[in-house]
Image 1 (cartoon, rainbow, N blue to C red):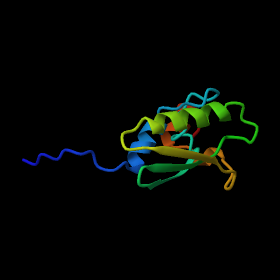
Image 2: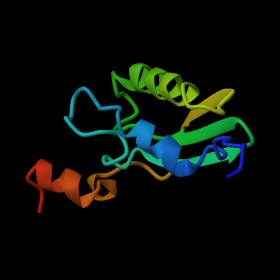
Image 3: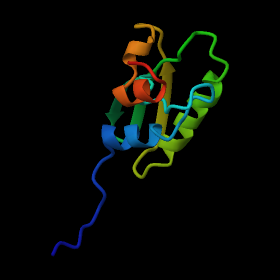
Image 4: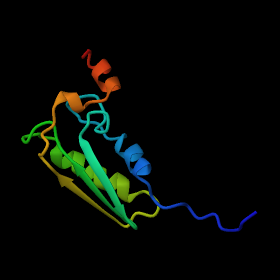
Length: 107
């Protein structure tokens, strides 16, 4: 048995799992299932997240970005988190997961 039990490097799945704990306060669905997370790039211990909001005037944008940054920074092996809000492509309900659409009664 090896004595080295180091955690493997941070993965996109690790980041997406944590981001799945963040809910849009106006819609009772997490930001991953809403389709707001467009991409995660990991460079060593730095995590860069591209995400959007449901609209440019989203009143919860600051809160959601701060929570994303905070939760991802708490992951082992992460030293820096950058969250960038992007508007291209614009968000639309088609980006939501099937589970999210079902929970909102969209078929």
